[in-house]
Image (cartoon, rainbow, N blue to C red; front, side, top):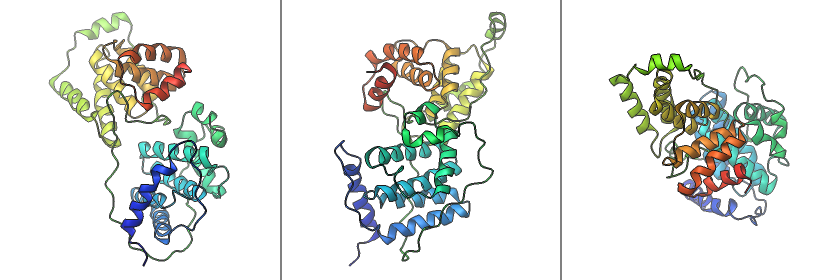
Length: 340
């Protein structure tokens, strides 16, 4: 008897730890992908063609779970998923899928040696060039061709996804709840790699102008915006909520360049959605967060590093580390920024 779809999904999820495990992990013996997941892949591609990008991303994400033991097939599925998430403006999801794709490449050469159609590869690399910092792409040999496309205009319309082979019909699983951003203590819920469009941060006014605006107090409505932004920046927030937090805090910060509270909150908001240059600009305009705020010092360090100011990033990171909870994420940036 063929296992039920729910059991298949649970089995795939259970095997994920082994696939993404230690450095000695190897690809399992080649086996045909279950028709259930082929159907999900096909349904996701069809949803993409209908421009129902959110539905396409949901179907494709589930389809990729069924391909965890097939690196080449998984790389193809992840490429489709990334394009769907990009078209749906799910930047957080796009970054996470790119991270998974780089792992498949690092461990199994699934991207460089896989069977991804040329048009799909070209469409993906165009979007990687728009979303991922050049320094990140330069450090990944399989994705260096995307670096050459930096500055290219985004496609006028969503790229056409290659149709999947026909597969036996299968009952689709219950739609899963949207993913949420998780930000453990001392660590951002964001992953490195997104190059979100830059927000026009007004420059710091000269001393005379700053003195003129210093007397302008925050209104009750503006304080309410900052409080709402602070709540939206809490743990387990969706990408939409994080963008809303940035919009709220940056609107107050731009109107009150003298308000350190607003600048630091806008800087944190920009960091959480990977607007690196904006985060650095707001943190600089707000002034030094102080050694008693190690998390914000860490956010500043990452923003400076991602926007190309490695020396300043190292200085900020060194100050944050003694009082910062160490996690793999923090240690990863410490190695990158400090060369440890």
